[in-house]
Image (cartoon, rainbow, N blue to C red):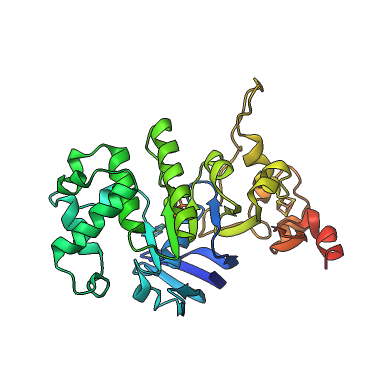
Length: 326
Ligand SMILES: Nc1ncnc2c1ncn2[C@@H]1O[C@H](COP(=O)(O)OP(=O)(O)OP(=O)(O)O)[C@@H](O)[C@H]1O
Ligand code: SF4
Ligand SMILES: [Mg+2]
């Protein structure tokens, strides 16, 4: 399980600190595909970096922590922010945004595998023996072991992404974090990559945290999801409920902007832009774009509250319903 406890982060810049995540609370369960959606710049990658513990200058945790816990091979483990990196690859792995650019262009794929698999996990194997296990794993994923001899530039974009996914899942980690794994790939390849991620999650029975700005991806793949807006979670719940009955006005607009089969009406994006992190409006940050904004919205920050069982939203419109729900 991943528990995010009152997490706030900021970037240190020459113009001062830029607060990006604001008092986030969230639990991601074992064995689920959890989605994180929201417009560009809302803080999705910042959140994944914090979950993976790549909190390095200029990113700083201002408050709160992330706890990664579970069992591996029957043994319990628990790591907090600052220590999560001790369990990289074996308990948690990360497919970064634009992952293909993290591959070393002048190194064959086999060397990139050897450099990534921690020594202690190689069980006193020779490099050839480790590569033998990698080759077997690639075959299980219907990938040719010959790909290990290739340089990244010799592989197509889709094949590079498959190799990166193979690398991230080779040690069967409890949690896989994938940041926009299908962006910049063509639609048919995207589908193949999503199927691969879903199949691996099922086989390895781990947790997949999938970041995508594309709501269509979440609809196809995720079990539960969070909608982020300007550094906060504004809605959280089962993906199918979020699509069939969105609560937060921002989610309603995101879902409404999706094309539907048989619907020929012109779809428009959400008018306006998110506020700057350095100078957000008081109260609800969505208020300047929200068709339902009232005076209280411009004064008070809405908290993320349980509106219906398992459904959370941060919106004053639903305060009464939240109170009735306890
Ligand atoms: N190194 C940095 N220094 C200063 N600000 C940063 C830095 N990295 C990100 N930010 C700011 O933090 C905010 C959130 O960025 P982040 O990359 O987490 O967004 P995102 O939701 O992943 O966006 P995208 O969908 O475009 O990938 C942005 O406004 C961005 O400008
Ligand atoms: S709190 Fe108010 S402004 Fe914010 S989303 Fe809800 S109705 Fe709109
Ligand atoms: Mg990002």
